Image 1: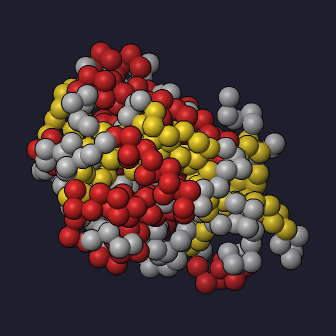
Image 2 (image 1 turned 45 degrees about the vertical axis):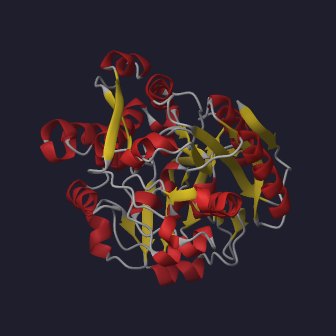
Amino acid sequence: MLLFNKGSQNTSFSQSELKEALYSSLDMLGTRKKVLVIPPDFTRFHSQAGIITEMIWQYYGESLTDVLPALGTHVPMTSSEIKKMYGQTPENLFRVHDWREGLITLGEVPSEFVKKVSEGAVDYPWPAQVDKLLVEGNFDLILSVGQVVPHEVIGMANYNKNIFVGTGGREGINKSHFLGAAYGMERIMGRADNPVRQVLNYASDNFAKHLPIVYVQTVVGKDETGNLAIRGLYIGDDVECFNLAAALSLKVNFEMLDKPLKKFVVYLDPEEFKTTWLGNKSIYRTRMAIADGGELIVLAPGLKEFGEDKGIDKLIRKYGYVNTPKVLQYVKENEDLRNNLSAAAHLIHGTSEGRFTITYCPGKISEEEIRNVNFNYADLETMMKKYNPEKLVDGFNIMPDGEEIFHISNPALGLWAYKERFK
């Protein structure tokens, strides 16, 4: 059932329009006594989901009893992050997702189905795991809030990914990430229908019908002044809500270039990007637009670790970012990587497969550490002076020496490709 459906490349919701659309949809749901909200965490700060979560709290008051940020395997949010993202929403409502222990398995997608949709890339069953709060909390409404945007693992982010990955468990997260990587990232990114989504949809249709989930999906893009605007809002309880948002996101968030480009400079906001686990969006969101022999420069003033989780960080440091065949070999030969398939998938996501060079300019991590994981290194201060993000515009820039670059101020907001590569 679709409760609200409005969006276009030129739409821009004001705060009052957003609240009116949201509240009219909630009115249609009728009175609810116990509500759970599942918004994204701080790594999706620009999704506008924080504002929506605050509006939901204002609407339901005491009936909103729990807020469970969809952490996946990310680190828990700090008090300052909660306040900055969710405004006046009381901090005592927030719960921390335990992706190791605090889980319930709703069912298992058969290995035969996974093998079929992946065209034989993988052959294992997939557990539909969720935080036990969703099942044991006795909620009469679960609002899953988030942004639909191109994504490296599942083609287009959000919808039931927010549930099965955002509040999922180690095995489900690992296997879904590896499924996408093994099938082929460039065959998935920007596509709403793909093997990973089909597996999650199977889980929704067969194991999660009893959960009272309603999705609040945004599509966010930059307006004419460079500020973020909500271009679309879709609210509903089934896949139609997601499909409509995904179709608009392709128009808003996907920049199709006429030819591959030689040099990209990507800036990573230090508050949002502290690890290569997240910062490598600069790689996989641009890889389909970078020419063979090209260069990607990543300005990363907040970079201090590789993994969001200490165990994954250790694996990244051990194996480094190498090409796909090498990662698959490592998985076959090494139990530690075989037992953490999301780390293996991440290593694949972070490689250029030798097509172009990747130069990281980190703020809080050493040159030796960067080179040890097989990235090139450049001094941040030097590169920030040469490519000052405050002076660059998003898109094409001609530098004083005549060099042409393509600048991206936030890789999380889009996907870039040249036409011949995206077919």
